[in-house]
Length: 155
Length: 450
Ligand SMILES: Nc1ncnc2c1ncn2[C@@H]1O[C@H](COP(=O)(O)OP(=O)(O)OP(=O)(O)O)[C@@H](O)[C@H]1O
Ligand code: SF4
Ligand code: SF4
Ligand SMILES: [Mg+2]
Image 1 (tube, rainbow over the protein chains, first blue to last red):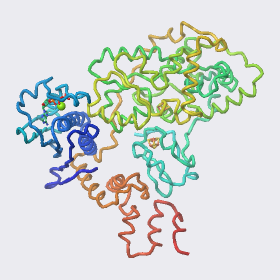
Image 2 (tube, each protein chain N blue to C red; image 1 turned 180 degrees about the horizontal axis):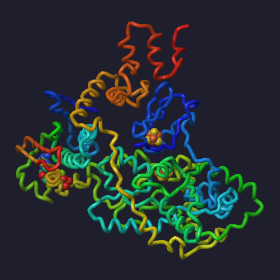
Image 3 (spheres, each protein chain N blue to C red; image 1 turned 90 degrees about the vertical axis):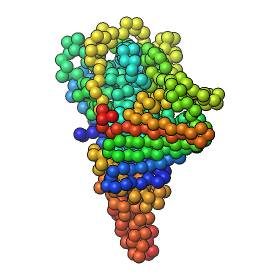
Image 4 (cartoon, rainbow over the protein chains, first blue to last red; image 1 turned 45 degrees about the vertical axis):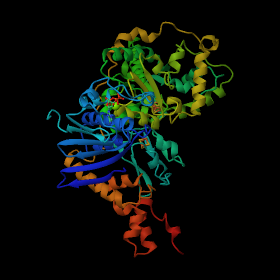
């Protein structure tokens, strides 16, 4: 596992892992999510929750690959919740509300050829997380933060 | 829970070389005391370890052939890949006559049930549009792989029995209808793999298998081939026997199942291909598929670990038999109305599988806080290890050793490098002493100066 900056605070309160994401490289897209999924599996999270997180993580990772230049994926794990923060350097999202709409996409021809760009990513993330927070600065980058509670229905 | 595994490591043959521990997709093997050891709950019976063993130390435990004679009626349930072993000039009738000669009273091909199964799958897909993709329950190694490595996908497995079970149910019923007492009937499956043995001995999703025993396909092939060659003169009279239809013949080959299923389907064969795809599927990134035919072996059952001949040849032979089906007069009668259809309703009633439970082998601990603690320790140890995954500690990777240490299955000093580093001041003699526990007595003696 090539996690950088894996750390822990307090008495087993939180573990963190960080993985880099390369923009434009679709073969490697999913690498960060896969690694985090492996960790969550070992930490004996409920498989159904892991699957939701995996789907959300992957969509956010692909968005960095498709729409930004480079980024990172950080996960904060505690017994109560899993928080995943995907941060990128990129063009930013001008209108987040619009971007959240199903079917809205600015994906380039090249990205569409790769089978992405249906405009379903962000809404899919929303569907699969308990809390979603997106902040974006034009020409600087975007931060997508997704929180999932480990005990079902605690949200 | 006890898991029955058909594969057996012959201690006296095993040279403890680490080939198998590296090949196993679930890290189920370790070398201890110079011999390969199995962690039973991890093994999915795929047979990858057997394929790579350079000295054939891993064998498949099979039922003694004489066991068939405990029964008045001795039914061989044969998979079509058994016929596929034989050269094309040997007709299937000749093969069956050889089997009858050898002691069976009936031969019934497993794939006769696939016509009904095809209906059941398509019905299930139509009735459950929310479950996608549905993954075939055909290959027991794949079902087990999903249980242990992809627990979030167990709900996608088709809850319908595999052709083997359906055929067993059908034939048992047929004989019962003929007035034969059930306890006098023994059903024996000619198995191309270890996974099907596990499926018979410790079934998933059903309490007890309807099959009484398993016969190693390779062993039977050798017996029958010699019977046939001995009897070149004329083959004995084969009782009227239904022939498999061409599509049924190739069901167990790659693509043979998927082509009958409605919607968007994929056929995936080979363990590493299956793992790669399931990984993607778990991320929800493979698009919308309706059905996945997935088999652990390259070329599906033609590549089963007990398939005697080369998998590509077996596959080609079966495809040829299927293609020549309608022109081959020696093969006997083509039956339009298959006998299995007489009991169609009965088979459908008994075709469902119970729940398939996830049983993750990845969890470090049931309790999350404990798991986090263990994870931390594992990372610490992993950072300390050389990271070359040499296998000399008896675990498949440095990371696996770290996990074994934390789970109490090994010690950090099992790593030869750690051991040399820690005991640096000591003599080579002592280092060799430490490694003996993993690698067996006297293994490294010849490394010592005279
Ligand atoms: N990290 C990002 N940086 C810049 N723009 C983004 C980013 N993530 C999303 N967007 C914008 O929001 C739009 C909608 O994103 P969404 O993930 O829903 O769809 P998509 O990526 O275009 O297609 P799909 O995810 O279905 O393949 C994108 O087309 C893009 O314009
Ligand atoms: S049969 Fe497969 S899962 Fe079992 S020990 Fe061998 S390689 Fe591992
Ligand atoms: S593909 Fe066929 S032969 Fe291979 S493990 Fe699966 S059922 Fe057995
Ligand atoms: Mg997207």
